[in-house]
Image (cartoon, rainbow, N blue to C red; front, side):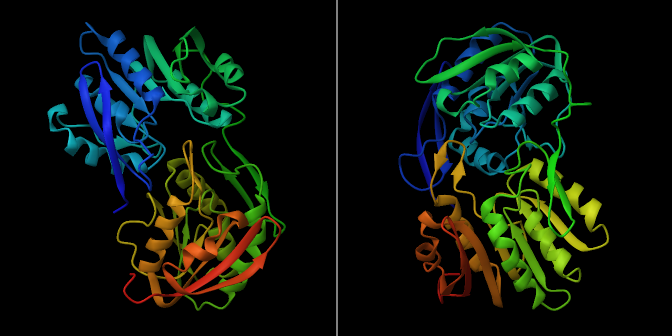
Length: 386
């Protein structure tokens, strides 16, 4: 289980003890945007009779638990919330039962009287969320959208203006901002930016939804990675198990299948929009292959062992940047390698993954590099570290 750090989150209805997965005591389970959103929602819901409330993209449960007296429904792109929320609810038994977390794979249906939303860092995903919310807000319903000012998309004012009616921009507090909106007329149907993609030199094309990393271009690290992926899978026998961990749009695992369609490939990502994107790309390119797709925070449940694990580890989680996600994925990969299996990863050179990989693997080899990225092969988990 990931290390958890805890602190007390003060709300108008009382304190909450909250924890978050991660490394370092400076990482909290909420920020000033959560404080402002909960306060504004509680004030506006006071005196309302059975309002229907939806919380969108809560991080670790601060919004869900802070508003739990209103029995909010919950939807989040990230699988992190589904793991963090029950742990935080257990620390606060007085809040009562909490709703199950839904994702974009099976989103809730409206209408909702109030939607409370964390503003994402990426403009396209913000545009997607606002258009989806337009379709589920009740007549006269309200949207409270909040985030830390330094993490708001550069074009956020334009994105809001194109999708919803902004009623009020509340004064900033502790470098956080909340925007009060009413529904606009723009919906997801017919929105040209819903899917974006690119083609590979091999002729294969991939597409992705807005919450997916590098959905409209092949990023530099993956471009360096793919030739090594092709070499690695070319030596595998039919039926070998391959995992594309933190798969994004699935381009790495799809390249493995393109090289060797006899493989059994599993795709896993923390983002439900990534999972939906992989499902679309598989249907277009490899509908008859033996594949699984999992929405999971790291290793899929009951994953078993793999002959090859492919990984381009993320190094940011919301506004937090670091190697804590990569370290957790390395540890999980070591536990799920077959006896002669190996982990193949690409990462930014400055992150020094050759050092952290050696915490879990006895054989770490650099197989390719450019000035910014490095590709490593790691084998033989160390005795006693699995």
